[in-house]
Image (cartoon, rainbow, N blue to C red; front, side):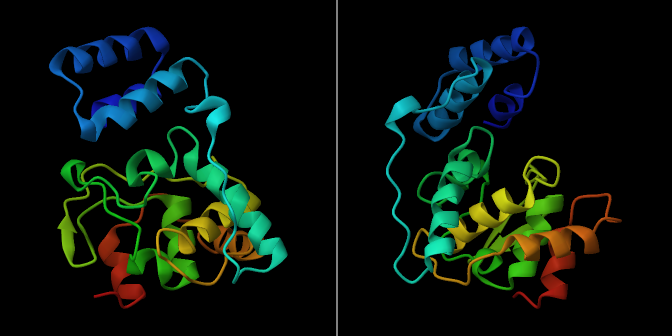
Length: 200
C-alpha cells in the first residue's frame, strides 16, 4: 500500500510499472481504494467523478462554518489527501498502520495541535485511542499543499465527522500557527506534540 500511494507522486511511466507489480501480487480489500486513487491521480481524474457524495453540515455549526465543513469534505476526498489513508469513514487502515481519526484525541483536542501536525506532518511511533502504530509511513505535511482556508475547512470537517464533535477551525487560526512554526523544518515527532499537549 505504501508503494502504491507513493507511486502516484512519481512520473507516470515509473508509477505505472509499480502499480502493475502491485496488481500482479494481488490487490486486496485493504489496498483496493488506494490502488484506485493512485490510478485516478495518474490519469488526472477525480476518483468517483460526478458521483461525489452529498455532504450536509452538522446543525451545531454556524452557516459560515457549515459552508467550510462542506468545502472540507471535498478537500478530504482529494486523491492523496486525508481520505487516502484515513478512509471515507475516518476509521483508518490499521492493517496498513494508518490510524483512525474517528474519536481520536489528536483530532478533537486542542485545535493548535491538529493544525501543527497537519502543516508540518508527523513521523514516528504514535498511540491513537490506546493502540500503538509504528509511524513508519509519515503523515503528509500540507503546509505547501493547502492554503489557510482549505486547511481550516478540512480540519473543521474531520473535527465534526465520523462521530467527532469539536470546535471548528478558522483560517486565522491556521495563519497564526503557520507563522508561529515557520522555523520548524522537519516533520513533528508524535512524542514532542504528545508531551506539549499532555496527551496520554
